[in-house]
Length: 387
Ligand SMILES: Cc1cc2nc3c(=O)[nH]c(=O)nc-3n(C[C@H](O)[C@H](O)[C@H](O)COP(=O)(O)OP(=O)(O)OC[C@H]3O[C@@H](n4cnc5c(N)ncnc54)[C@H](O)[C@@H]3O)c2cc1C
Image (cartoon, rainbow, N blue to C red):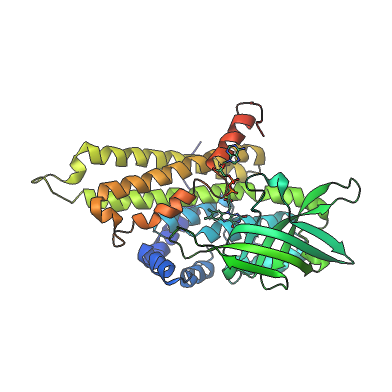
């Protein structure tokens, strides 16, 4: 057992940290408040090869795994730039296309995802279905060689920045007549696809959208994979990378918040010569949050290692636990940091309260804490399913 990164991973961590610090949380907040995107940071990360670390070298990537992508997510977040689209585009979309797309789809889409010139976002959530993906109502029908997609999706991140959206729909299985999931690569400018931006209480340069698909006509090769049978495994293929990278983003955000707070409490003096941090009422909550963040990081490392070793089922348990632990730790760390900073904690200048909305959302999305607890109760503790 080792808890060390290998030399290449260490180098990657240092290099991403340096890039993140060059931009910093001020840049992230400025872009969010201006209603703009972190285009420059994304382009730099793509040029330096960080967005494609997990994509095979023959498609322009770095040939690494989710361990490497988790490092990128964590370090950018630890520099105050938690980019949700890292989870959506390189983690979910690139993994799904690489593992279950056709060779033609891999050649067409992966190089752009690797160098950051293209983004593919992911649409599964629907207003009526919510956490219950068995109720998905977006339907794909055959029309000659084409497909026609109709339905609604909600909270879809980054549609305004992406060239394609990977839409989870249902098709009728010719043999059984049952509906089964299928994934489609839908151009974001396709006729019949419209969107409206949701007003979210999250300070972020990345936006969420409602999507309306009204008989969106797609060619046969928009279906992900060689046949409809690719749908279900493709859907599952995205889950572990999603859980692990979003957990890494949360751990990075937690580290960022604790660092901001401890810098402050180690120097701020309001009772004579002693610092605020000397008071255990201030330092213990910060230490407690630091322990929670570090525990989450350990579980992330375990999940990523299992995933990269091809042990998908075990990675599923560890990835869900990592996501749960990190979501809770990040929310605790940011809230504790705000408190430790006092009034300064609520200012934009100190850059901590700016993350309150994002970490709160991290306990809901992309999978809620309750659905993870359901998973652990059933698959680890052997309890009966309640739904
Ligand atoms: C910032 C943000 C970005 C997002 N980006 C995307 C995206 O890019 N693509 C995408 O497809 N989706 C995205 N989502 C959607 C997200 O995945 C869903 O919000 C999430 O899965 C929960 O679904 P819901 O909101 O419909 O909640 P609901 O399913 O309505 O659940 C409401 C509450 O009930 C709880 N609950 C539901 N069922 C159970 C149960 N059986 N047992 C116990 N508790 C239960 C839930 O945990 C939750 O607390 C995003 C959401 C947010 C907030």
